[in-house]
Image (cartoon, rainbow, N blue to C red; front, side, top):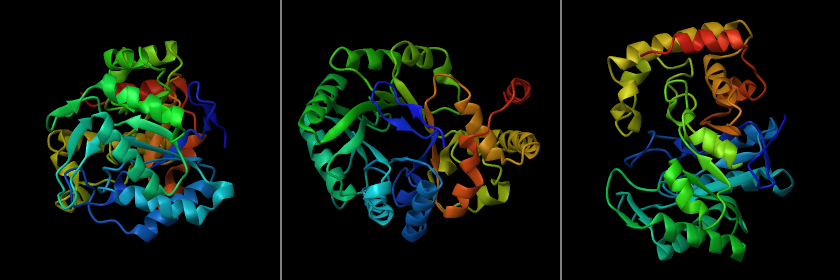
Length: 324
């Protein structure tokens, strides 16, 4: 599988990476419902076998569970084939409580990195990212400047190899960049969510900031496997129930759009999900796409996105059909 340079880090990553949000399971505000840990480990192993060389996780995914499962998968893969491990900080919770808060304070981040190193069981984290610059669900303690100064110190200390951010706007990137270079940005990006194209992606291109996008299939909605019945049967602790794209009137329009992606994919023996992912990778400012795998079979059905290329005509056809 080809690799792409991630900004100025020196890391060369596969076009798609394993997203470990969903393998954190349910039981908290941002959960995906029940998940089998053995299937999660098997999915990561299969992804690595097929050439994917990075995993993106976060402490808040399952309130520690995702990082622990990733740590188990790393042991199963073995040191010789170990993928790069990317994780995050700033979303925190208290032991015994499942309420998520937000802290950019230095002391909090230092506690987080030690906990992540322990759960992942690695000597250093390959890419450590600030998860959010601010938190819509509650107040933020600390500041971007305090947090980024702390990450730069952790890099100097060797606890993390590279430092990046997630969900930052241009002004946030500039605030961090005045303290230390930003290696990468992780923003949301899909055919249905294109807000980063006007300012964020051009800024990252101009400053050689690597971009790894999340939710390229809009949390599974564009996978080609989602149906109205599956949506109705989702467990109550699946966060997607509350998202507008999964609710009417958008749901029907989005499912019809996924059918069009499936039709484009059939011309090439590809799935709708592979088309959706490949669409994000077509942009020269995007380094890689984070793809959530919960079972090995899902890896098999989406791995082709790493090499599939849409024609200019197909890109125009897809973009003309985007639900408005």
